[in-house]
Length: 310
Image 1 (cartoon, rainbow, N blue to C red):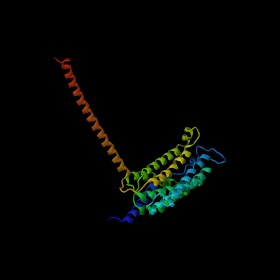
Image 2: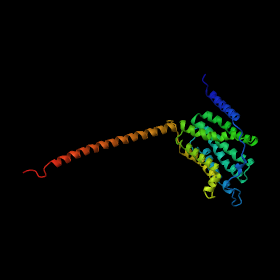
Image 3: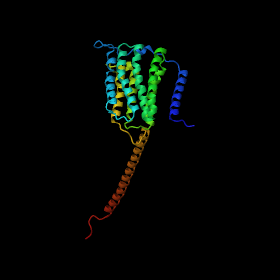
């Protein structure tokens, strides 16, 4: 029996919950490594501990406020659905709050302060996932998933803090990072400029690499800037990409996935290459024919007398 829309949503949430329970059963607990708090750059400028790791959060504040104002004031992004406004507003609130939470944590890195660094990020992860569902799948499904996703994000941070287990938080952080690029490629978008989703994912991937190689980047830059500081700056490019996308995009009359567009572009390149080949072949035939003509002309000239008889 076919399920209605509500039944499909319940089935999807039930499947996700079942997979989560199975994953929690079959995977080992991931405790918080205390070495995480030992960052490469611990310099103190102007009386601020870990100065660069603290002040590098300032771009989140500026970008978050700009994005929030543009979202809720005057419909600058041309939203056509109420769920989009709620989702994007929550996203930019999370970005703005990240600036305060991360700066607070880096002043004195420890588990208690890390809660306030991670909590705003889960707001951003959850809300952007809901927005993507609204745009690519269904507005009702995405709007209804916003609050559960926000609760799941906050719950993952709480579970880590009290159970010292990072598995739920890792899912909240990395599932959107994998799902959004895949869906951006495979699912047809409602709006144009959807390639900016991939740019955002690329910046976030670069940020995670810089975070993982904190000390190596610090050494590579001759102890000027650490990988974690660069991570903050690159991660701030993610909301920048979304603001550019929201400002430039428009509703597409013909919905076409990035994968389909790439296939068409590759087909066009192949056909134009074939045309170039045919032109080359035509020139070859032309020059071959001309060389034959030149040979015949030369033979006639050589066989003819230099001075005609009078």
